[in-house]
Length: 268
Ligand SMILES: CC(C)(COP(=O)(O)OP(=O)(O)OC[C@H]1O[C@@H](n2cnc3c(N)ncnc32)[C@H](O)[C@@H]1OP(=O)(O)O)[C@@H](O)C(=O)NCCC(=O)NCCS
Image (tube, rainbow, N blue to C red; front, top):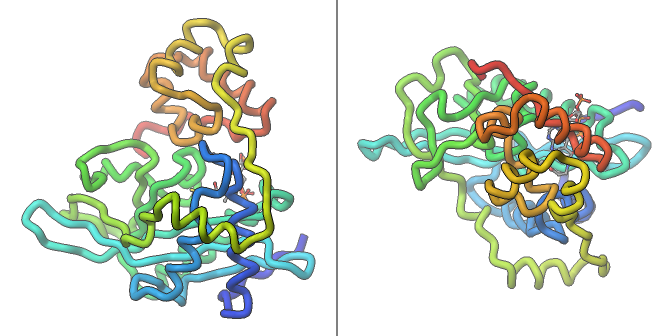
């Protein structure tokens, strides 16, 4: 498949919002796309938008993927604010997933962000996906959520050596990422009607996993299968599922069409 990556143009806006809606529909814990298309729609009109890092991927004569970046900040304990980038949503049409489109968009945009002289990229995202591009746990740099929490799905990547040295603090995204259910519902009405997706409850794994492994997941409030995407293989191990348990979980995830949990090296 020949893939072309280029900047998004205003003529692409609606097609990209439709693509975002398709990519995210039921893919996490929500039966719709949970406002990701509205975030894209609003972001392009805001100062936080970075038009030089707003890319589409084209294949077979249509847009099959998209990534959009925005300005974010790390606020240090003494109140100092330092600008960083974040990205998202990153979307690939379901029929084109697992064919390298997301990776191509990530590699292209990271290289461009580096050329443009940006310092670092921070992201809340799938903790077993982004490390392949050079993202590490943000906790490694002393960067936490605004509430001071650390988890593997908050990741950071320096765009030059030492870019995050001495920059520990709290990571803040633009407010565009806060969208209300009412706003999402109204915006979604402007798209063709689409039935809500079925979210697989954790119970579908009760027969497939050994009882202690299932119990660990239930104890960690994993109430549906897609929720597992929020946690890394390392986090699951730290909960006590054990390597055999992780292998059981991975067998189930693969069977159900989800990506496997990875065990990344402790340094990452
Ligand atoms: C996540 C997404 C952007 C990845 O793009 P893609 O084009 O399908 O991915 P690529 O083909 O580049 O990479 C495929 C690899 O990533 C892995 N991967 C894909 N999604 C993953 C996830 N959620 N968690 C962990 N690994 C994942 C695949 O298992 C595959 O691994 P392999 O190379 O070992 O076989 C795409 O699946 C998508 O749009 N998903 C729905 C929206 C979404 O979740 N966006 C990201 C939010 S942070």
